[in-house]
Length: 475
Ligand code: BES
Ligand code: ZN
Ligand code: ZN
Image 1 (cartoon, rainbow, N blue to C red):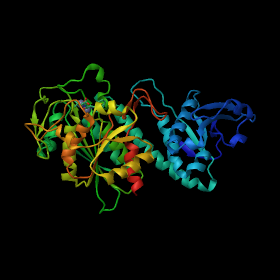
Image 2: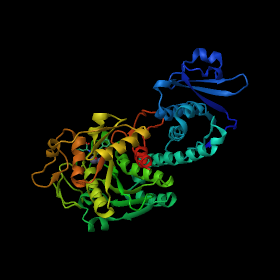
Image 3: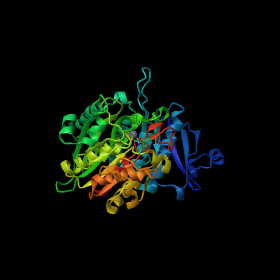
Image 4: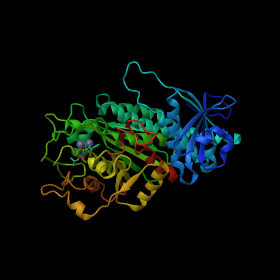
């Protein structure tokens, strides 16, 4: 739990200090002599009056920024976790002074995400309960501080929700289970959920989606989430998230050592749900529809095989060259659904789509494509506020040529070049002229080795905060 309470006594107090500034009076001289206050350094100290303090360095004030707050807050709590300390006072005056009330959201995210761990299924695990008391704000701002805390907790919970979904094993999160848990979430957070089964999917000729979905005994579900918090006349933006709850590769089976992450192939879906959860909880003024094609990609008698030609909801035919390039197939029908059935005027699709994006950008930067500069610049504002990183790939006709098929309208992969671009361009064929942003989070949705202090091994919740702030900053 996080509280605003200037007076609470705790086991430990955290104090943040810049290098080379004059806040020395708070720090005992003996500490100053050995503590240079560099970014992400710390030293514990028992003061003469018996107060236990953890001094945490921020580095030079000129190289610090808003997003570093989240990192350094998570860092400091991880330090204290080593000593099993549960009641912590955190002096946030340094942040408030420099970054104002906006810094509260970063503090809260640093706390909640830094202390996150997946509950798991062990029978002996006990719950960790931390109480963090934010201090050092002007008394007359207490109401504002409390308000900011509760808004930020809702954002953090969106990220945590996404992490939990992605960390959940495939046998505990089939498309049906995912649909049910999203239905329950909608009741709690105040968004509408509609779930379509395989009959709807086939009746509406979503053959690209169904071709993947029918490969498994666990049937597919099309999960629709509607949050209309904006004006009636405002455009509807669709957030389309890849929800492959298990990607074995199908007949183009993945090698055993690539299968570790197969349960995490619904990171896009998880991000959509997390973002809409936060938007709804915070009653942000936006009209958003989340569209999640949820299915498994497995081997069975019903599975598709390379060489198959299939239809799609748009009527465009697709030559399947690789059954492991399944994400773009289900997304193709999902974006068509967004345009035809939900009257979406803008589309973001988000997916753990290609290994190629990991080769290109690694684990801290996601790849993007877009057909609309204006929409993308709004997204840029959103992800800069969120502190996530994205890199836009170019689109040229040469790239479009790479997925031309001799026997169908398009094929589901090119040769082994620029795989992130060709995957995105496959989806572009189905969005046509609708303003569109494509987010490939295959590298950023999961970390075996955390890159940031506010991550833990496993799911990161990538994309949630950027999509949230896209709408929030627009308000
Ligand atoms: N879900 C994978 C992409 C992926 C790879 C996600 C690594 C996370 C980590 C996707 O369905 C896939 O298998 N893509 C293929 C496409 C190829 C066959 C054209 C890939 O990237 O190898
Ligand atoms: Zn695949
Ligand atoms: Zn996949």
